[in-house]
Length: 168
Image 1 (cartoon, one colour):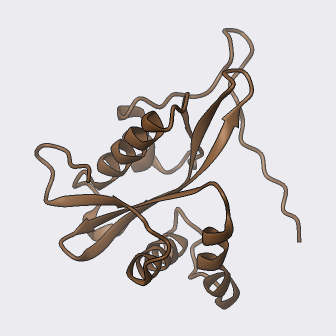
Image 2: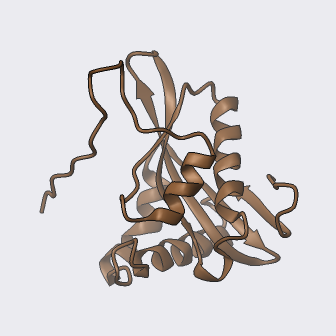
């Protein structure tokens, strides 16, 4: 469990995807994120809802943290282990980080990031990576305050851009 002094009674747990209650919480949190304007702006499709939990359970590098306020899930960090070729060490990519609107501004995001970082350190990871929309100002402030920076390898080489190509 990870907490931040001065934050409300938020607790985090690493999700056990064999537990039905954790499965339900992950599905609910990812669906809430999907509905958000900084997500997909719509609920998960029926197909995505049906495939999400089995897919996360089958993926060999899945690492998920849930934030709870009492018994209610209020945030999620869906992560995947990767590998840095330059450092020759594992890394953690924060693929989805979301806090329900009622709990934004209460330190939940910081608590989730701290839990992910602690686990990454335990695993011997060299870094955390993530992507964020440039108009998601609240998330950007949280990430920058947690020590994230725009990625560059060396001065003058430029900053990394995140690109995507849909395969349908």
